[in-house]
Figure 1 (cartoon, rainbow, N blue to C red):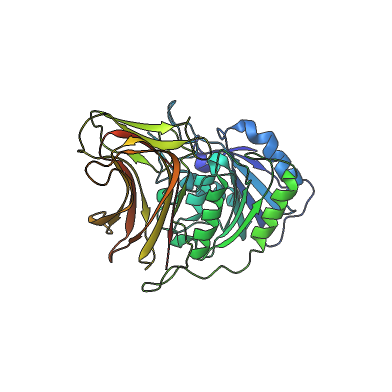
Figure 2: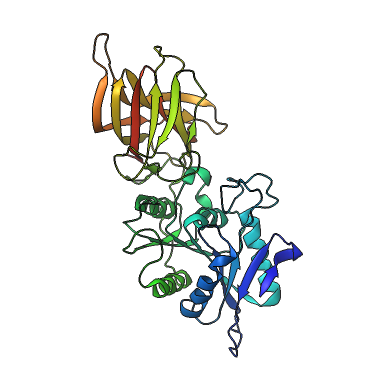
Length: 399
C-alpha cells in the first residue's frame, strides 16, 4: 500500500503485508520500519519486498519510509533533530513515530516487536530514533553505517534498547571500528547489543536474507542488557572509546568535525589523497610566518563518567612543521572552558631545533580530566608555519 502518515503528503511510506490468507497474530503484528541507505527513495522498494518475503518471520509487517528532499542542495538523506536539513518541517524521529502510529491504526501491533532496519545513510537516523526519551521502537538492526556519538547527545537513553549491528571489517566507506565503538559505548549505557560481521566490504553480500532474519530474531529475544553506565563517583571500565575516527565519511567536512576561523595564510584541508589508513585525513597548512592566531579542526563529545584519565593516540605526518599540537579542551555543562592540556606536540620544542619533517608516525599522550567536565573538545591545531596531517585519531578512558 502506498500511504501517507497523518494525511501528510511528505510522510510517504510503503506498507508491505499482511501476508495473504495468514491469520493476524493474537498479540499483534511485529513491525519493521525500513530506512534505506543511498538516497532513501522508492527505488529500494523491490529489495524491501524481497526482505519481507525472504527475511522477516511470520507475523510481521514492513513499512518502508521514503526520504524527504526538503531542498535540492540537501546533503543528509535522513535529517534528525540534531542533524537537521534546511527547511525541514519534521525530523526522521517524528516521521518514524508517525508511521508506527499510522500502521497501528490499521493493524494491531505488538509493542515488543517494533524494530527499525536501516543501512548506510539510514543508520545515523536509526540511532537517533532509538535514543528518544519516548519511542515505540524497541530494537534496531543497523547495517554498514557510521556511528558518531558527538551528533547523538547522551547515550543514557539506550538503556534496555536492543541493537543488532551488522558490519564488514573490509568496509572502506564506513569503518568497522565505528561499529565496534557503537557496541562498546551502547553496552556501557545499558543497551543489549550484538555485532555480527560479514565479508565483502560495504553493501549487502552473500546470505543477505538469512542474515537479516537472524538479526530480527535476535532482536526478538535479545539477552538482558549489559551493566549500566557507571554512577557518579565510579570509574568507567578501561578501554571505553569515546572517539575513534579516521575522517572517512561526511559531506563538506568529516562527520562531527568543524574547522576554525578563516585565517590569512592558513588552509583547512580534508585530504582525500593522503592517508595513513583508508582514503582520507585531516590537514592544516600554514604559510604565514607567525604563530597566532591558532587554526584548528575540532569535535566535541559528551563526558558521562567519573573517569579522570584519557589516553590519546593519532597518526601524524609532518612537513616542515614548526609547531602543531593535539589539544584536549575540557568544558562544563554550559560549554564553558575549564582547562586544556596538550596530548601531543609536533615540531621544534626549543629555539634552534629543526621543524618536524617525517612520514606517518604515531603520537600518543595521556591527559587528566578535571572535575566538572561534561564535554571534551578534541582540537587538531597548528601554530606556526608548516603542513601537518592527522589520521586514525583514537581516545579512550584509562584507569
